[in-house]
Amino acid sequence: MPTDCISYQKSGYFSKLISDYLDEKPELKSLYNRFPTQENFKGQLEEKEQNYPAENRKSLVTALGNQYSGFQVSEATKANISLLSNTKTFTITTGHQLNLFTGPLYFLYKIISTINLCATLKKEHPSYDFVPIYWMATEDHDFEEINYFNFKNGKIKWNKESYGPVGRLSTDGLKDVLDVFASELGLGNNATYLKELFENSYLKHKNLADATRFLANRLFGDKGLVILDGDDKSLKQIFAPFVKNELMNKTSFHKVSETNLLLQKSYDIQVNPREINLFYIEDNLRERIVFEDNQFKINNTKLAFSEKEILELLENNPEKFSPNVILRPLYEEIVLPNLCYIGGGGEIAYWLQLQSNFEANKITFPMLLVRNSVLLATEKQIKRADKLNLSWADLFSNQQELFTQKTKEFSKFNIDFSEQKEHLKQQFEKLLLIANQTDKSFIGAVKAQQTKQIKGLENLEKRLLKAEKRVHAEKLEQIILLQNELFPNQGLQERKANFSEFYLNVSNELLEKLFQKLEPLESNFTIITL
Image (cartoon, rainbow, N blue to C red; front, side, top):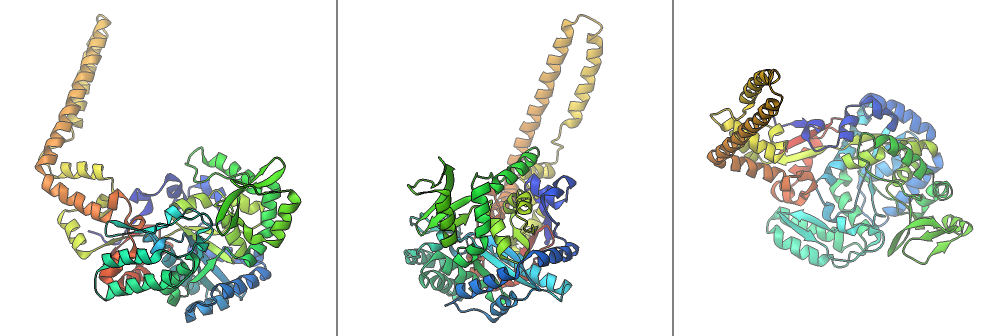
């Protein structure tokens, strides 16, 4: 069987919007600036170069210096932070939540896509430099989405209450999580490495942002990854004029609502804007800012500000204002000399709603690239698939459809009664010709009999299929077992499994193969054999 890839559009795991975007359908072209092809990066470079202020670059480098203070920084990352001072240096960015111990596998795929694209662009544009950025979603608030990771069909969970931005959350209590994880890992060098990685990341850092920075730096620092925390007063100062615009004019609400009206005619809407797309944050508080009774109120609290008071607060404490999903992309592109954002299908879907808001704020809209997706398989699984005569298209298909398709292939009989139904239909058409020449009541009798006999054939078809499924049960069970191994709970492996499960067996081969195989500008699921 072919062991390299299957297109996103044929995989069955991407929405109509993303499939149409990847096909560059003309009706979507107004929703983005440039499609991410090698040829289009030159124009994006030139546009961003003209529209990214030098003072923002200086603030960015200073902020990164402060954020990395106290961390061991690789030479490659140090060099990249230094390069950001240069007007010929640009970024490629991905963002992700602070999932415990990286969460699902696609955390790795996002970052590797970002690093590999930088290397590709450097070869094509040697007079420029390209820095991979991981934007940590430290201001997110939904702790239930990130407080666990899956390992060997079980869930390793951090039980704790959280109310404010997750990046500021204390790591107290993670020793208990390590104990559970360690007991599941067992013995051996790889198990020891994973235990130490968890311990050094989470037990030796005070908050979740620092722990995640350490972890991502340990995994990708030698490749020059630069990790950025947007929960930063100096970066928020750059963003403050745009926050003011949001508070006073509700620009993003109007612009994104207009785009949504156009999109919803053909597609599902990923996110809906609020009238004000900002949160107020403190260490244990993250609540929406709403405008009611001529005041700016903080939802679910007694805090309220006049226009003058909230603008004074913004001037003195910009770090208390946090963009939601609608405004965070704008914040990222203001802060960074960024060319391209790399995200999953869901992320790219909501970015496609935002172009008009960028135009209104006079900020260059980045290129949008769907991240690499991967299916990891063992050599044994590949051999089993070959033995069962399964293609990757088979394995990616709906399980019930696969079950039926393979039953029909294995059967000695033709289980499709279409030919018989067509023959029956022709016979009844002749009867109807006779019926039309006699009493009208006969027409109804002929039609009723046709419906009854067609239904009878369909029932026989179903019964034959069911009988054949029993005959070939052993083979079919092997197929379903293999598909369930590769697609846990009939979903994507990359959204369920944690990297540690694979690292335990293959060590550094996992990351090495990912860096070697992933081609960020190709829209394919990559199948990698471990």
